[in-house]
Amino acid sequence: MLTKKVKKRVSFLSLLLIFLVIAVFFILKSLTSNILYFKSPTDIQLSQDIISKKKIRVGGMVKKDSININNQEIEFIITDLKNEIFVSYSGTVPNLFLEGKGVVAEGILKDKNFFIADRILAKHDEKYMPPELTDLMKKDVK
Amino acid sequence: MLDLINPSRIFHWIDKLINFINSIFFILLLIALTFALILSPPDYLQGDSVRIMYVHVPSAWIGLASFTVIALLSILNFIFKIKNFSLITKSIAPLGLMFTCLAIVTGSLWGKPTWGTWWVWDARITSMVVLSIFYILFILAHKLIKDEGKAYKASNIIAIIGLVNIPVIKYSVDWWNTLHQPASIKLDGTSSIHTSMLLPLMLMLLVLLLYCALILLMKYKTEIIRIKRKNIKRI
Picture 1: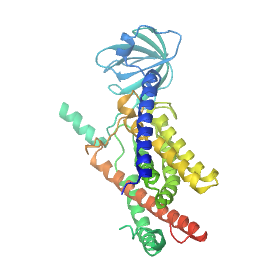
Picture 2 (picture 1 turned 90 degrees about the vertical axis):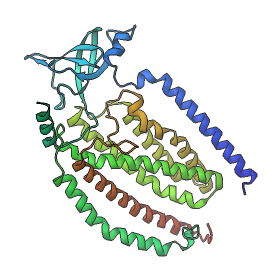
Picture 3 (picture 1 turned 120 degrees about the vertical axis):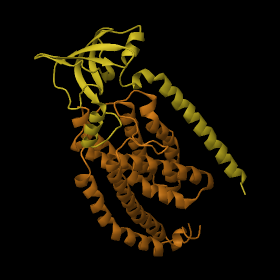
Picture 4 (picture 1 turned 60 degrees about the vertical axis):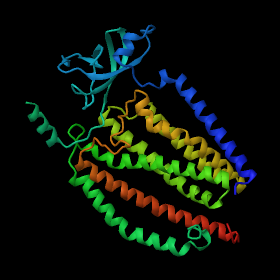
């Protein structure tokens, strides 16, 4: 049933697809550092060459009870549960910027533990539920 | 089976199907919108902007699924030269492009109140933009290349190349740090969306799929008419 022509096309296609997958794999692999939208505090602790003038993004969870708001700036701690980084920011924060929730800060690194942000983005997680449910959950915890 | 999808005698059941979908579509749309906009609860964090998800998520799924179908049919078409598949892929492409763009636009509208920004170049969003570019290339191949045989060949190759992008979109949120959240509904069926929100989501998916079927059938019919007008009896 399979003619010679069909066999030829099949082998051409499989070669094309294998070639494409390998090519895309290597392209994405070499671009990984650019594709990563933010670095975690651990990445920053481990990295050797941090250019202090260059803008970077740090992401993780806002540490519980770490938000400190005075009239000039907001200070908080981003944690990935292994390492932490102290962030100072002045400006408005999105509504979903809350303790224990995900956050991405954009700005300049002063040193490995201190970060000056000029933009804050809230990172939403994949959970969706009605408000009554969270009230119940809080009661259970108490 | 093959006789049933033979384009030459397809009209009697295409019209029936279009009429059937037309008769239930608006009722289902009303039900789904009632659930999505009124009956479902607001989210504990996002409030009412969670309702954007009921359009965003099904659109993104349909955008991805359409391209996968186009690419798989293109592979079969490339190997076995079944002209009918070209007509089908050509009819799906505009729908897929529309839903991909809808997913990007609604995502942007949702991003502003939730993330605090309209747009970021993270892996998920960028790969969705790449998908829409593949759709545009696919459609342009049909519009710009005059010779039909060459147009089909070019569009097939574009679709097959674009297939590599599909797993990248799906797993972009797992492979890299992205601002976009990971999938709420996993491939193994577990979901982190509360049932009261899952129901309107599935209803909206059903309605949008019906819309796709409706437009696809109409467009497919036009393509067949176009071919018949050229006095080609058999395809």
